[in-house]
Image 1 (cartoon, rainbow, N blue to C red):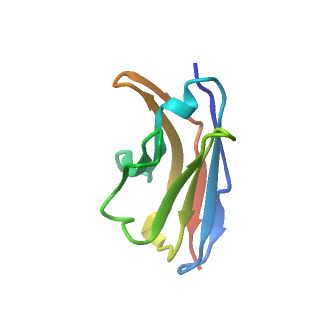
Image 2: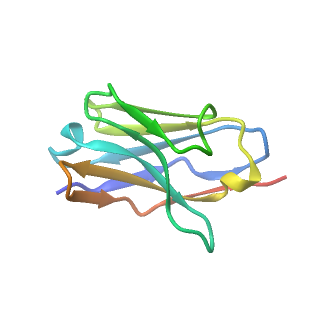
Length: 117
């Protein structure tokens, strides 16, 4: 089993930056695809970024492409999300995610990111 704990959310002005971190417990984390989803009020949860276990393949949601960067440190069981050029529409709860093979999926509890002046 994997437990995921996010940190790094907060309030930031438009155009600013944040770095989210997620630490995972358990032996599956380093061999799982991990990443981030987000959910704004009244909206469905959407993909932000995913990175495979080796880091060789990365996928971004269209709305964050070119602004956000996902990375991982398997030695520390961590996945990071660097958020740059933030916009008010990036305001959401950001969830850490891990997937082992196709069906073993875990979620973190979420961290709030608010972009506002």
